[in-house]
Image (cartoon, rainbow, N blue to C red; front, side, top):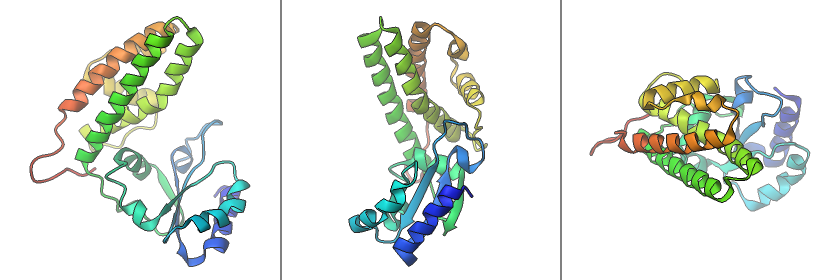
Length: 228
């Protein structure tokens, strides 16, 4: 365990006591695929979390680079229908550093997953269109628009793979892009272009194709939802 995380967990134990239920590391650090710029993502679940707890935890968290996500127990288990994309990603790549395993038994309905994926795809398409029409002559702004969309794009692509296959989603970004482009039928070669105007134009058109694909996915029937 990372020494700084170990210190933080020990501090939380001292402050919260028996109400400290679990600490979950997720993302690239959980499976040792992190880069130098990767964030350390940590979820801390506390029984009956209060505002006073947060105040008391401030000195411990202030010493740490990345602020953990603090959640109450009830809140944690009642949120997989609201944030199914995030929960599916956590379920795929996580490590229990302290306390109960609050992840492995999570149930994530594919109908909830598809709905959030459609919403995120529409939001991304709107942001890209607005950003491009406002800044198409500004190379720096276009570059930032592409960079800022990459995280959302990858989350959407991974979700599409989860919706269409029971296979584990690869961590390698190029593999994810190639799988999704083959599935939906768009040419992903533009991602390697050095022309940012070309990239953003192709990206906007491709995201529209993605949206149409996600909209037609059938993950529910009248009686049941499929689980991830």
